[in-house]
Image (cartoon, rainbow, N blue to C red; front, side):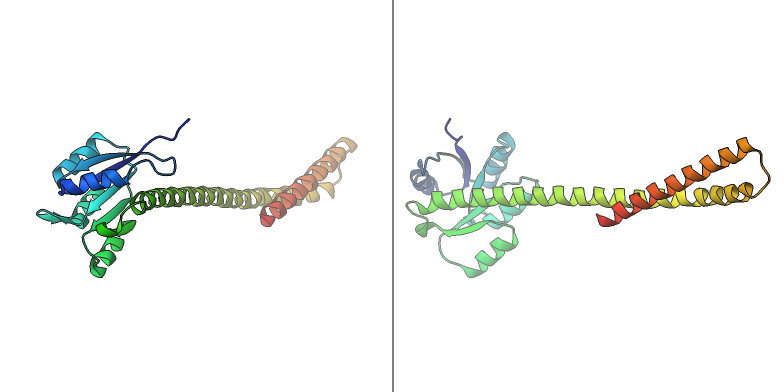
Length: 214
């Protein structure tokens, strides 16, 4: 079964570049691409609302009445968790730094993103983001497991403490009664009580020690 197409949203007011991008984003390493085009912020937000399964966004920096960073901010504010590659017409260190601050995954100069560079970058970003999410999910699950273990350990400590206090009082009372003159039946009952208390004390110690090893 072939892998599903990678859905790309290109936000760029240059229709000519749409054709260029579509040309470069042909099948690459058995990966296919489906390109959607938005020439404005309004068109981009509409497409995002209509299609909630874009894999990546190609964002032009220079746009009429706005720029790619501002649109990116609005996209992230709207809780669309889609990786963004920023495209510019020339190298600008300031724009590159700002792009990283906005959480943009990659920065490309259009005239350098030729041949296989554009599809290769798209695939690398998607794979990198997917791996990052998998790592975060594992870390989250590990943290949850750790919190559960800590909660169990705390419960065990509390249980041991709650058992020890009344158990100590019962043991003292049993010792006092065993020193009194009692008939054979009551002495046997006190002996069994003492044995059960010792057994409980032993189990509590084992539980406490096992908890301490974790």
